Every structure is written in C-alpha cells, then in structure tokens.
Image 1 (spheres, rainbow, N blue to C red):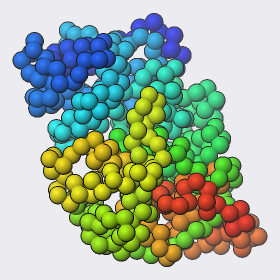
Image 2 (cartoon, rainbow, N blue to C red; image 1 turned 90 degrees about the vertical axis):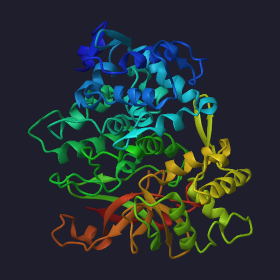
Image 3 (cartoon, helix red, strand yellow; image 1 turned 60 degrees about the vertical axis):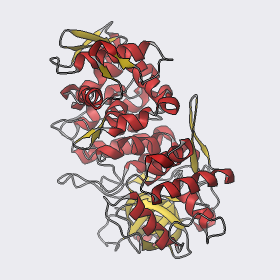
Image 4 (cartoon, rainbow, N blue to C red; image 1 turned 180 degrees about the vertical axis):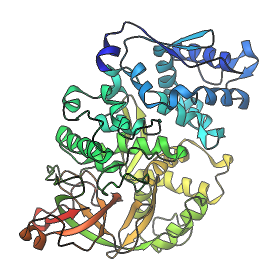
Length: 474
C-alpha cells in the first residue's frame, strides 16, 4: 500500500452521498482552509447559519464521523498520497484544504476558543474536536514534524478507534505509514497471533526510539480474547471518545518534557510473548487512592483529591499544607504555552495564580462568568494529565497521578529508558515461569499497570543506578 499511494499523482476519496448540512461544512472548510487570518465566528451567510450555531456544529460533527473516517485501511489513502481529493455528493474538497482547516482551527483557539466550541456539541459522546483531531493525519512527509508523531506507535494510537475485522490489521492496515526502518521489523503474516504482532511493535518501538514511550499506551483497557501480557498495548481497545485529544496530547507531546530515567537506555528484554525482564528502581508503594466514580463531576473529584492529600477542601492558599506539590501534580508539572511548534512549557511558581483561579472556577461549578485564558489553559493541562487517571498517595506522602485501576499495594518504579515512572502490581513468581534458576532468585514478578506523574522525580532526581534490581513483567 505504501508504494501504491506514494506513487499516485492523485487519490480520489469518496465520503459518500451529500447529507443535510454537508454543503455548508465544505464551504466553511474551503473558506477557513484558505484564509488563515479569518476568525471562526464568521457567519456562513450563503447558508444562513453561523459557525458557532448548534445546527452547523452538528453538521460539522457529522462530517468527521462519516463511515470513511472509521475504517483502518483508509488512513493510508490520505496519509501517503501527494494530492488527495475528497468527494462528498457532487462536491470536492482537497486534502490540503482540510489539513489547513484543522491547523487554522487549532491556531485560532486563543482568539476564537475553537477547542471549547468544537467540544460543546456532542452526539453519543462524540465531539467535533475529537473527530477533527483524529481525522487530521497529514501527508506522510509532514506527519512526524507537524503533528508531533515521534514513531509509528503514535500513528497506531491516533487510529486506534478505527475499525477492522482482523486484530492484526490494527497494525498491518497502517504499516504503510511507518518509516522503512520500522516496517522492516514487522513480519507481515496473517498466520501469526495478534499478540505476536503487537509484541513485534513494542520491540521495534524500543529499538527505533531508544526509550520506553511505547509503554505509555498501556492504560488497562483490554479487549477480551486476545490474552495479551500486561506490558503489551492492546491496539484493539480505544480510549473513551471524550478523552481522545487529551490522551493523544499526553502521549505525543508531554512525554518529551520528562526524563525520570536520567537519560538511561532501556534494558527491556521480551523473552517470549508472555514475559519480559528489565531493571527497575522501586521508589515507593501506593497507600491511598481517591474514591470517586469515573463519571463524577470535577468538583467532586477535586474535593476527594484534597481529602486524600490531607488538604482543606478548596484550599488555594500558599500556606495551606503541601499545596505546592499538589497543584503541580494536578497539571503534570507543565503549563499550556502555544507558540509556534511549542505547546507546553515547564511549570513555574508564577503559575500558582492560574491554579488558584482554576480551583475557584471548579468550586463554583465551572460557571462561564469565571472563565478566562488562565483558567482554560490550566484546565487544559489538568485534563491532559488526568485523562484515564486518578490521584493516589504513597507511603512516603507523595502525590501521584496514576492509572484509574491503581490500588493500594501497587509500587511506583522507574525503568531504564522510561521518561516517566510506572505503576507495577506485585505478583507471585511461578516456578514454571521460564526464567533460569539464578534469574528466578533475583527477579520479582509484576503486572504492568501504566505510567504515572510524581512531582519531584520526573527529571531524574530519584533515579539511582545503585538501587536497580531485576524485575519480571507478565
């Protein structure tokens, strides 16, 4: 597929028949895709609807959820071609126009609040913002530069929601988008199990990148029947729709701001498709976890986080307990900072005021009257850091953003090559595990739960090579 689409001069992509509102959508994409300075509150007068109207937003949402966007094999049609033309009924739209529309909409967030607007109207949990971000795979030569993809696993995560019949096609259906060096490490063979194919992806990712970023795509979601070990991502399981933009932002962008392993190289060895060995610094043990439902309001969740941290409810005073570590944990130690190719920056003491305003906004029920740029920017980094996570505490009193299924007794560890800490769950070592006897005596066996954020260890402060021990992951 790589050779076919890269050599084609033009690829025609059929999105199907026109629908009610599709012409207004295409007109708007053409307009905002060619005029980067045009604000997104412009009224589409030809159709008598405003860009921010519910009717138009629903029509735009429907465009990005047409069946073509849901199929795994179609991603390469646009991602690899030099010139793509989308057909919807009798209308045409170029891939370049659609790409420019997406880029301009993100660039106009500061002045037009496009992220908020695109997330305002939802159907079955789907939003324009999520659809646009998932749909916006640009041409192959721009993929890694313009959209922050570091490796092929980022591409797999972007299209994890797309559908196919064979689980192996979650990889094979996108393989044309991978660099040649990565493609050469994946054996294209439908006689192999999904577990074997996904294991190849993990090994290739570690080899290509020299780090363990691929493990950040493991968050506990599993599709029944594949029987994958805990250290292999399940590419058939998609993130909940509303969390997609935040989840992808954390995996694509914010990982590069951390260096928990102090630039060490991985010693991660997959012995077979069910077990792996690596060194680890075991930092701490999880002691307390937040007790709120996954769908609880932000007000209720923050109140519970304050309780867990031993802070007074709605505490925003600098002299209030360990508030410094607390608010830095909530934002993952970074602040939103869109400037050119830069999306985030390390948090500073001066950002405390933004947290205090944001906390007041949360306590007031997120009322529009208290919204401003500081509040929305802090909420963005909080939403990125907390996606699929909850707050837990450790025996030494640290605050941790950890995977939702983390529980008391899990351990916090740093692995060589891991930019972030990980949560591991101790297991009973089996004598028939396949390890040599001397390895069995030295090793501890764990289930891999997912990655985490802990203030004060994200930049190598706690990585001590003398504390490394061999662990087994199953």
